[in-house]
Amino acid sequence: MSLADSAPFRWGIVGTARIVRRLVEPLRAPGHTLVAVASRDKARADSFARQWDIPRAYGDYAELLAAPDIDAVYIPLPNTLHAEWTIKAAAAGKHVLCEKPLALNVDDVDAMAEAAARAGVVLAEAFMYRHHPVTLAARQLIVDGAVGAVRLMRGAFTFTLTGDGNVRFDPMLGGGALWDVGCYPVSWMRYVLGAEPIEVSATAITGPTGVDVATAATLRFPGDIVGQFDCGFTAPFRTEMQVIGSEGVLDVPRPFKPGPTEVIIIRRGDEVNEVPIEGSSLYQLQVDDLRRAVREGTAARVSASESRGNVASVVALYEAARTGRSVPMAADS
Image (spheres, rainbow, N blue to C red):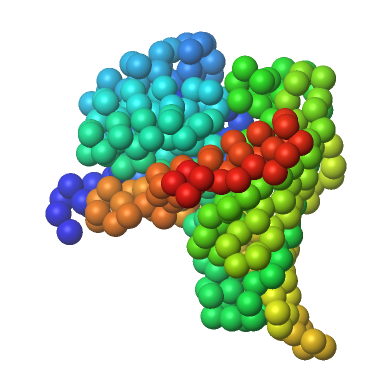
């Protein structure tokens, strides 16, 4: 390993959203160092930096991107700003870990991927659950035929959200339940199956601000496999995924917020087996993955093409909810 490879990976944070609090410690764990944070409000940036003992604070995102001692940036901005600041970060030579959804349409995903490729930087979407061993194990068990041929998948991601001013309720900032939490079961199904949906349908409940606050969706995959999930801001906290096969049922009780120790439950007839899974911090795993991709040249676990497929699926679900019709998915979507 060269001196450059062993040096700490230097991070900047573009924004001060609540999710940032979960990333601060991973971004300065061994192998990493957290250099700076930026906000459009300098006082807010200063306050955040003091609270979390971050060396520098900027009152402008562009100033942080111009800093020569930052290798990569984490972007937790509102959804509508992901493409703009990812492209600007790439142009500044920064590797990017961008919060989900990577963008709100596939054209923006393509532009972000092209900007990263042009600059020779790594771009990854921050789907933290994709790095946990329980996710990898679930896919391998399905591939190995633990429940036979897959027939149906079911899942949910809901929590109760109230209060005015939350960006999740703002249609101008890419708010809505499907974008915020529905993207998780879509991603999980696509990953576990290793396939893209060929048709989708959805029913949404629209809140007073015009965004969906609860949505139920169905995705049809090749081989007559059906995936169903509900998501939203109007029900208690629930995260679960289930795969029903020709020979059994596989349950992942906490697929999107797994802890250090998890379990996968497999039922075949009267036999019930619990598969224990040991993991570590979700957020540490995802920042380590980006550093490894940069320093070792490995592929980021969540590729731009995978993110593109997820965005295309969610866009189609929104169209299905809006029109009340099933929406076929293009082969190249």
